[in-house]
Length: 372
Image 1: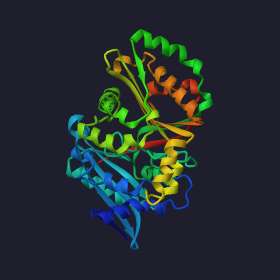
Image 2: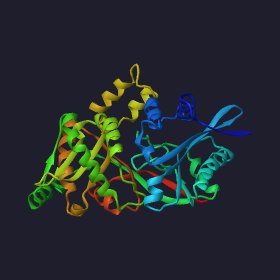
Image 3: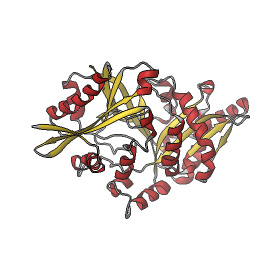
Image 4: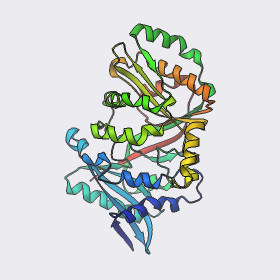
């Protein structure tokens, strides 16, 4: 018999977070989260995503053992402002038992019907800066700290339950040696002069901080036209600023501004923390933080996390300025591999940015949809 229980207490939420640790035990490609970090993300008094969203965390039990988990989410900004009557689900993990998947999803349907919503989509998080999509290809690829890894039967379960593909995402990587400076060096100098732009580089995190609010504003402007985009609020800006910016090597944050000091482009690259996170096994102490610190400063792999260009400057080659700055930094750091995070398969503009580097698609993922 399958029993579904809502995880409410800290102990129950810890069990919720730890379930994948057993599900993927000895899996060399799964990357664990930091348990304390996940707990904070699920804390409705700390994570500002809950200002505009509500979420419920459920565990599935069979023979008194945890066999699955799911989060049922309503992003009210999405529902009210975009008129998308959608209930989300995320943080989905399950054993290979279709009945367990079905029982977990029933809790999502309940939340959707209670609020007169019309369809369900997932897996996805509370906001656009959370993880997204179920892996459909690339099960033999090491995950990243900003993606979910899953077994191959997840997508099969959704299809068997009548779900259809809603969005498709691709991930890719390329060796840094593919990045040839001659592709964009002269162009970026011409673009700087034509539009009176200059690049901003940093050595210390404290020097980045005065620009972070502008960066998030630009993020909102850059991605506003994409499907299901929900703008980041002021309180979310503060939350992400405190939680993540200090985690990133400041040398991997690049800005471009105009003559009036308006930010027109930005990019954030993160050193790969995957292997370091595997060593921490979900714990910062006693030695986990040392593995992360070492990766922050010495990883030879980097992940392109975010890149945005103001709509007025899109298709004007401004990205060439950013690529030139990264080429200089990556050369100094001895970077060997560049990884791209999930990007919508139909976002042709972003794909064109990378064409000269001959990226190889190594993972694909999807969100699935079903009418209620």
